[in-house]
Length: 211
Ligand SMILES: [Zn+2]
Picture 1 (cartoon, rainbow, N blue to C red):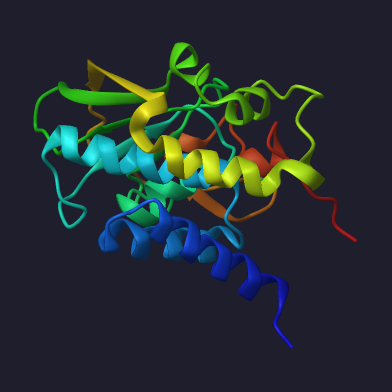
Picture 2: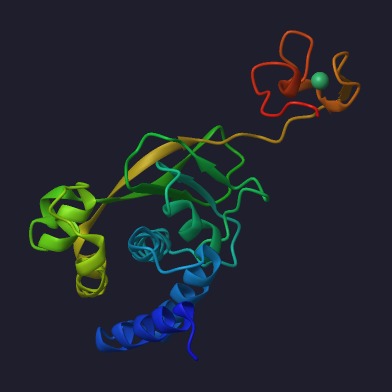
């Protein structure tokens, strides 16, 4: 018996072949889909965005790159898998602005550096009616009947729905820090994360109750 995941992977492979996606990008998209757990429309568009940003920067994913993602939905995974800007290596910043846009730059020892910002261009979406209604979260988009059509359109479009601009971004140098014991819980945190004498978990970032 074939699992749901295998079905969607098989479909994804044949759609990518049909649209002549390069073998390298196909591999990256398959990795991305597995990482995200399924080929969500947002991660597929994200793959084209990050691939485009890398080319504009003339960068290679093996280089140390820094990414900013303007939405927490789907798109951060494309930066994590393809550009290897991850939450854990501290080279990914997610700013919850709510736009489908990424900014990518290389390392710099200056206070700021040139970056490339790639975004979904609403004007260009008009040529792709299914992406257009999905992107607008319109009730006209029916997930149950239009999912495959949406995936086909995303691969048909590729970079055709994207635009870019050159921008300047700030560079955050690594900070020196000391370990501080919180008087509330007795656990330690870096000094720069102490707020009003306490750790976040004893303050505004409290997210659990002891049981
Ligand atoms: Zn505490």
